Image (cartoon, rainbow, N blue to C red):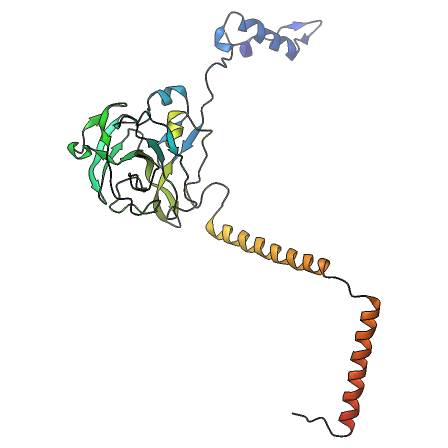
Length: 299
């Protein structure tokens, strides 16, 4: 029986148990009913809601379902763009220690082949997210629809020309949006892992891919950030509102600079002000005298 359904018994001529006795009853019940004892050992989950359905959490259970694509160190972290079309680092670069690249999570092959001269493999995960890894040789040996498990060998780190580094576009829609090759992208051989939700970022009615931090999937980064489904990233508001605030900020800065200029302007001495006043008065007298004799033209 729940403690909230206990009968209220009259005592002392019709009085009733005070609320504190019920609360004490809860404490006593906790000794025999573990269901009422809170458990704090489990980690608190944080989620990143994305456009349609995918939910990304940082719990141990989810983290155990994801693995780094290589055994190397992180060379460059995730740095999302301020707008979906702007430059940014839409993933994580991993040192290619050993050269092997494994699937970071279970899924099916959505794309495998060359993109802009580099081998790319894209995996579709059950929650709607896409993982793209590049450059990965032997990616072309996979077929669309092939099933892979987390940690399964995909290929080895390849090479490719580093063109369009950090560009916002993706060419034919595959790839991670950032070229990861031996030529310039990393100080040494590396593999780039990008995670995105197709059409997960809507701006002014246009849908763009929403990029997520892969380290959140591994449980290495957090807490996650809640992104609006419309407009810009968190804290930026709509673009019209952002532009309005930016204009107001510039106006305040201009006003502040003008006030500072007035305060910092050196004050002229009393003698200098008197001399300037005499000069001005003398000039006015000469002008009036010349005007009376017709020496000043109306020109």
